[in-house]
Image 1 (tube, rainbow, N blue to C red):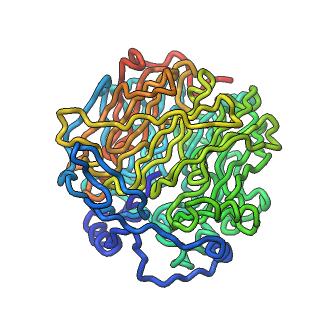
Image 2: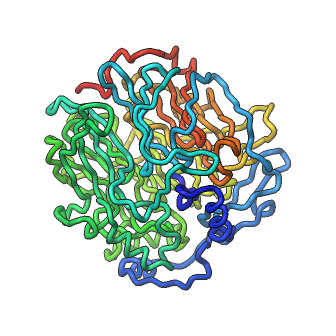
Image 3: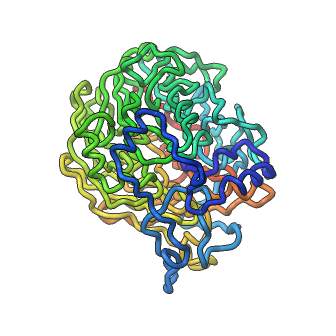
Length: 585
């Protein structure tokens, strides 16, 4: 999820603008630069003691980065994290109202479905109908998309966005029971779809600088919501037909700890689960996992394995930790100090999404892959889930601000032995190094290596700009939709589809993963002032979810959701799906 200006998410445009002028007046990202350092939390004290203090200097637009004479863009070497990235010479002075497409057609557009910040997406079939779930902590929208040309909203909860902002106020600090990422899978034992909802520490609107806000640090240590996950049986598509059957904390050492006393981060993003025995998720299990530079986040999450043989009674199996995550451990602290990011007070360290395999462990899945932020890309041997082993590791030169290794795509691994990994931008206006998508040769998973970088998207010749950085907002890859997208593995071969913020949806030809190329794209227009306030337009296209079984791409943009088709996928099925999803295993 992009940092954005989430603290303003529930405010009207006037109040947001007023607070924005006061809170976002430092182009270097140091919104609390005038506040004294005040560290009382023992783990933060240990972090400060273990690291140097070397934050990046704010680069100068047009001097340290900006447009080249040939029309390309030169990115800065390093930047701090900021909510108020400065403009650079040559950037557009307006939000582009044009759309661009290659090998993509718009089937339908549905305005005001998501928030302008983020969306998780899921698909589930009930009673011969297909439902699309779009959600974040502050909203849930469920659409009947059986006919993607005539989608109907069947459930709407939380604020709906318009020109004055959200229709509902939402206080991130007052959250008590809002889930984050969701995974839906068919469970053979229960003969039902089962939904696993992740509950984690809020990442936005709670704190700006952990070195200067001891009260807010304490609030996150004693968070007022679950740190873990909940399991629901789905007797229908909407929440009034869901039954809670299990609640677990990822603080496995204190499984009975009440809310407010649970340690660690909770479960990040969506879990990886096919409905069978083993489930994988991202979590920091306790407060010692605090070796991270990110200014408003306290944890360095690792991975966990859970036994879901009985979904009503999940059992913790194992924790996966890599060097450089834990404080209070000399070897771990030494590994952290050896990382060139140590002390930059900017980088995300640790996982953000679940560990991924191409098939469940119980069905023979053995090799898992994970992106660990500034700690790099890892491969793991999960043949014994109770004793996972680290196999291989890839690192890259520092590329901050922004996350570095976040998303992992394993869709081509069984066919080619290659996986893809990327971070994504967190600052606007290209005020950070570019985030590549890396094609990683993992045919020998003990020795993975970067084989290629995906090509950088470029605007069509008829655009009023020569580089997407000029289009305003954020530019770079986000994610490719994950493993929960409908369809079989063979439906995904040869293509990788990514949300790319201001560059919309980018479709890459990866038949030869060592030579990826751009085969198609859809770049939507930015919303007008009649649709969204100015402060909410930056994220552009922030999520993608593909129905590979019906050849339909859902693009989630700041002003709404697009249903797309592409000949690269094949002819779209505009009726009910031929096979039910989630698949019956």
